[in-house]
Image (tube, rainbow, N blue to C red; front, side):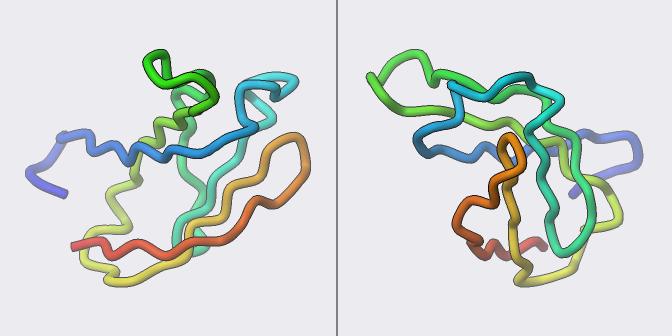
Length: 85
């Protein structure tokens, strides 16, 4: 995550998210820190593929490997790990 004021996004891909009830019901925690979900829906090119755009909080800079927890309509999706520099 670069200079002050720079916005960094993480794009996640999977299935089953476009059927969410509301964008407000899509939550992401990265390394235990809540992150803003800007978009969660159809990817637009590949049939059946969904995309989630997550704005990364600056506090995550340099954290290394952390868990990503995605919760859609109250249901936890498989937890994955990502390395953040």
